[in-house]
Every structure is written in C-alpha cells, then in structure tokens.
Image 1 (tube, rainbow, N blue to C red):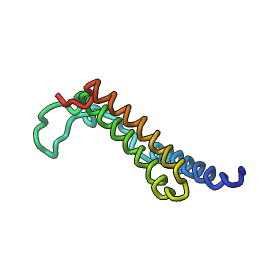
Image 2 (cartoon, rainbow, N blue to C red):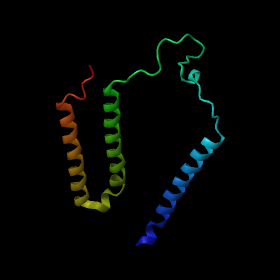
Image 3 (cartoon, one colour):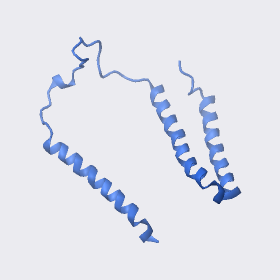
Image 4 (tube, rainbow, N blue to C red):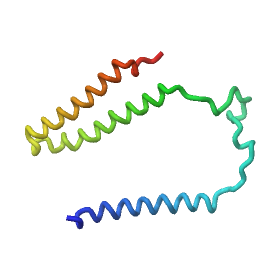
Amino acid sequence: MTAQYLPVLVTFALAGLVVVVMVSLGRLLGPKSHNPIKRETFECGNPASGSAWGRFSVKFYLTAILFIVFDIEVVFMYPWAVLFRRLGWFGLAEMLVFAGILGLGLLYVWRKGALEWE
C-alpha cells in the first residue's frame, strides 16, 4: 500500500527541494542593499499621492476567504462529477450533505451580514 503513495511523496519532496533551492539562491545571489528609499512610494515618475503602506478593510480579506472556501468546494465537486456514475446514489448523498453543510455556512455568513458591502 505504501508503494502506491511513493510517487506522491517523491513529488512533494522534489517540490519542497525546489522551493528551498530557489529561496536559498535568491538570498545568496540577490542584491543585499536595503535603504529607506526602496520603501518609498513610486508611481511611475508621477508625484506620490499617498502612502503605499495603507490599511485594507477587513471586508477584502473576508471576500478572499469566502472565495477560497467556495473555490475549494468546486475542486471537490469536479472529481465527484467525473465519477458520478460509478459512485451511484451513495456518492450523490455524500455530495448533497457536503453542499448542504456549505450552504448552511453561507446562510450563516449571510445572516451575520458579512456579505453586505458598506
């Protein structure tokens, strides 16, 4: 059984190794000078109209998290749709429970007013 997961393990190990090598090379070979001018706002040669270090509203983060949740839902629904005939009624019931739980979560978020943009 573990032999079946060996390719997945090797893929994750290689991906991790690539990340470590890229970050290490970037730190070793990249420029080392850090000065205050690099942290200033630059707007393509125009005079700066404000600070680049402003705060974002929490609504943007909430929107991003809701997008990720429902995007992952689609990621789980695609393989289910491909295997729908083989899964039969049990697969349909499982997906309805899954979609129902996400629907309840959406209803909760909607009732709390998280989807209102003011």
